[in-house]
Amino acid sequence: MNFLRSATRTSVRVPSTVFANSHARISARWISDSLRQKIDQDIKSSDIVMYMKGTPDQPMCGFSRATVQILQVQGVDFSSQVKTFNILEDDDLRTGIKEYSEWPTIPQVYVKGTFVGGCDIMLNMHQSGELEDLLVKENIVSLE
Image 1 (cartoon, rainbow, N blue to C red):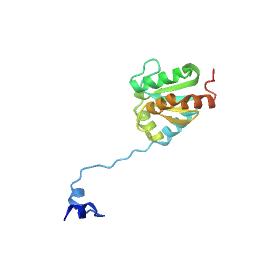
Image 2 (cartoon, helix red, strand yellow):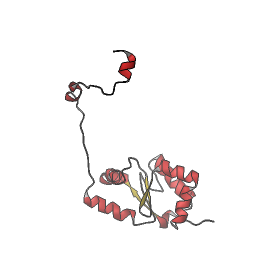
Image 3 (cartoon, rainbow, N blue to C red):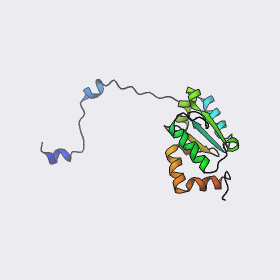
Image 4 (cartoon, rainbow, N blue to C red):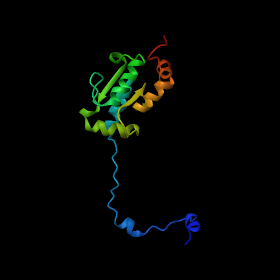
């Protein structure tokens, strides 16, 4: 078969041995109803909820540290406006929050019960001014 003809083929035959010898496992894990209810309650328990590695005073990863610093720069008061959960203390929460939000990384930030994103999203929003706009709109910080 010439190159042009092979490049324009619309279907490809895959030998059945590719699948017959495959040792790949398909696995899925669903979050339990009780954990889902707990997370539902938790994310509504404060203006800002953050699932992170460590604590705001002692973050255990650079992304968690950066997210804490971004919120501090925005003028968020951690003592009264942010509730944090250390996912390193609870393995079910660590995997469950990722399934709950359908977001694969930690930290995760929720504002007024709505998932905002992780460190990369928070940084982009901070740099563009969108984070300040959101925090002002939700009456978490005020324009000075």
